[in-house]
Image 1 (cartoon, helix red, strand yellow):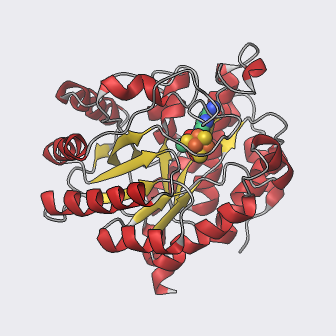
Image 2 (cartoon, helix red, strand yellow; image 1 turned 30 degrees about the horizontal axis):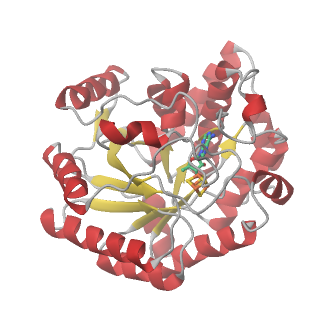
Length: 349
Ligand code: 5AD
Ligand code: SF4
């Protein structure tokens, strides 16, 4: 049955310590019942910060000339992938700005193939590389990628228009999301919350959209203003606490409503609070993406202010992360893909 919109709005409007505790506890019960308390790691490689798009909220948009652009070489990327394999991470996420030229799409095809070969098929691969043609999605799928993340950012068409230049289109984004499912990917999307001009009702509509589109995975987070963007006037009054809380309520509401999808506890939560990702797990998330990109590139991938730049490709950090997860009573699903249960349920239907 389609979830009730007013109930979602009420969850998102939760205030007061006791009520919030109750909301997160309810989400956690649903999580335990439907997906368990294992956290799946996806080693995140931010493979290039070159982007042909110019989203007004994003620090690495094409219109920002204030930092150098990079692309990690095949060898380096393979080394990072090997490191993740050695740490017994089940999967990788390969993320970059959007590029559709053949040199780029061929590079990714080759990279996916090589990672599969190097790991004897053991590493699961999620791609997060924007809107592409069906042929490109198919090529990457055939090379061995089996999950794809493409955030719709907001389902409010008017707001989408305000946050993007005229040549970006929500309809194209939606068409791409549907292509991904058609090709056979485990498909993920997501939105930002706390966007200027976004209402709680809009966010409830976003969650209903996830339900209607029957998505398998979610990667969502609070919007965090960036100095070098057209929205830089929002940097000063930005309320970190409020943004974190809204991000957590969003996770909880999605878990309660969507039940068996995978939900990532994202870096944006970490940027707002050192224990933000653990809070995300306690609010209902079950996937965590340690950033394993070589730290020398980190400066160049500032989507928003204060994005954590610390070095998660050190063995010590993996151990710390594992300890902080065990401290909240969960375990890490080492050597497991941790595919979204939702995907298999919809295959059976
Ligand atoms: N704050 C939070 N998230 C952001 N993203 C881009 N810019 C920002 C920002 N300022 C997110 C978008 C995009 C993902 C790669 O990063 O949702 O899909
Ligand atoms: Fe490019 Fe993605 Fe940033 Fe938009 S949000 S400018 S597509 S990297």
